[in-house]
Amino acid sequence: MTPTLHDVARLAGVSIKTVSNVVNGHPHVRPSTRDAVERAVAELGYTPNLTARNLRSGRTGAIALAVPDLALSYFAELAGMVIARAEERGVVVLVEQTGGERERERELLRSPRLGLTDGLILSPLGLDAADLAARPGSYPTVLLGERVFDAPLDHVTMRNAEAARAATSHLLASGRRRVAVLGAHEGAADGAAGLRLQGHRAALAAAGVPFDPALVVATRFWDRSGGADAVRDLVARGVEFDAVFGLNDTLALGAIRALQEARRRVPDDVAVVGFDDLDEARYSIPSLTTIDPGRRWIAQAAVDSLLERVGGASVGDSRVLSAEFVLRVRESAPGPTRG
Image 1 (cartoon, rainbow, N blue to C red):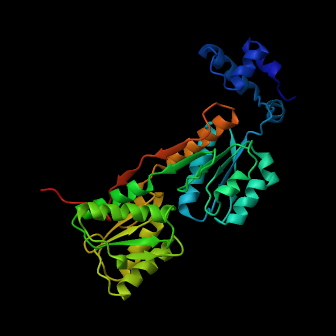
Image 2: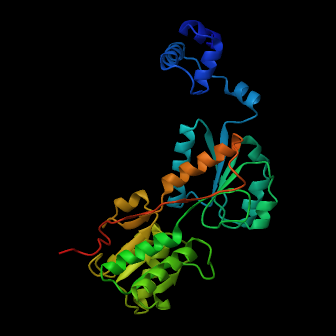
Image 3: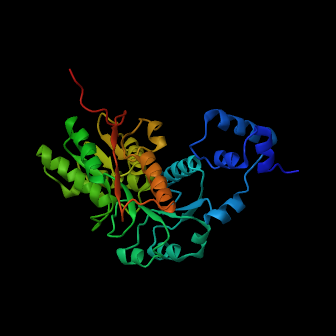
């Protein structure tokens, strides 16, 4: 027969209430009592009736995560970090892909599927403030990404401009003066591309290096082919450059491939810096110097903020939480040598 809460209590020599407190993670239980209950749970093979618990609490024990595209390494790794943090907090994650399209993001906010979850972590690309204002106001939602909306929602983001400035400053400190930027998006001032380009230009201005628009290459997609094609375009146009700043790591990794095809040595002829600190950045040849924007912290902060809202914590109308960044110096741009 399936073991019950009563069986666990009888074997551990405690009350049913004490067993319930241990199973539900209540902190105010003596360590010796907790150990006794956990041993009884393991011996009997007891598992809580989650359905009954959820009916009593009005919660599902699941949250939703919506990202543009899991084929992009950044979002795939971020999703893994969100899932890991959610497991630590005792909830599961249902993952949705939106393609970054406004209509699909709007549809998601109205979808009855959200009724299967207690809250949503959303990385929007197409939504505007009016779309968010039209969402069900009682459904807990946390936003990810660069676009900070004037909405009563928690927003977890990264320091795009400051981090990009640090990346370009690193290249300039090593003596590079012709820094090509790959991945610009025309007219996008408040997205990742626009903010990172702002940071790049701020670093140039601080160092007294003129900005040359010929060194900025727009790409439709932030993938390896986009980075490789951008470098091939620079070479074909005869643009001189001694460094590359890919606005994300996959652009930078594609750039390294095209530079090798063009017989440009990395970093001797051209130094390369990326942004995101993907796992593969450590294992490319050469390994990629890049910005770690604090993705693990972002994932943890998003889950924790959402669960605070789900639990009804009084934390104010909205918060903007910004991760700290770190420049990871590796072989593709080792920095200045010191004598």
